[in-house]
Image (cartoon, rainbow, N blue to C red):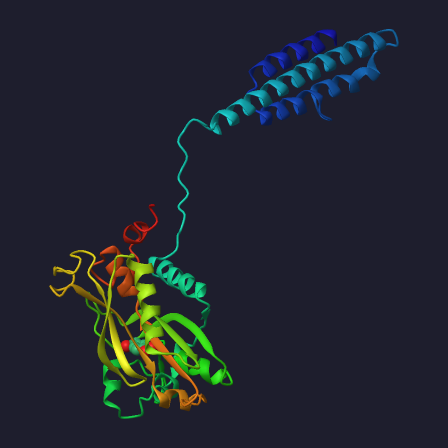
Length: 343
Ligand code: DAH
């Protein structure tokens, strides 16, 4: 039996030396130390031994078992260490590699222009208002002195949802909405927002664009107030060296109506391709609020007067940054939009 145990130990240690995986290690453990393993088999046969032999063999069997156990434990540790090393090697991070840049979004240029204009007018005591993009025929046209069948409606063909509901063609309806919501109190408001027209898109037309409306109603508001306000605005947006010019124009909701030009920055009034050789660039429409518009919104035109203006941030952005095509603002080519963030 001694020989048998020695043979078992020798064989086991040889096998353990060759083990490479934890699975094989488990198998070897079962083969030698398990319930049906070789050592257990030897111990079971001890009943047949003489009482003198029994402790000797018992002690030897225990030693062999311990020797196998120790070897298995050492092997286990070695395998685990090796596996950990393999894993660490595989997951190695080179901290010296350059990082991947995080792409950060930014404010759309039209939005930046709108915020700039808002800041300017807030500084003058104006409130920023909002109105619905799906508008009624009444507010979009009628309340602005554009009754059904009025020829000036043709200039602003809309997308109709029903006969009475449409996508607003300008931000002017917010004038009437604001006045209607108040009870003859003075008003100083601007309203930025999206507007829609049934135009064919080209370099200067887009079926969707933005506008900013302005409205100032109080007692004794005069044309000179409008002129001063517009002059200040032009100098703020385009530079203190800009001049403004008001040309007579027509809008059904203002009387008199004007269009405001600024002197061309490129040629300083000499005439170039940007200003079409006139020295002036058209920026916005404005005028004194038509008495009928005041009256329809519940303001007594004998007591109150007001001025209004409407401008397009798209056009302002095009002029300010030399953008050649209005569609660039809406097709969202990141390469175009990014230029405005690289300070
Ligand atoms: N609503 C006009 C348009 O879209 C612009 C405009 C002109 C607005 C004169 C005004 C104004 O408030 O007084 O063409």
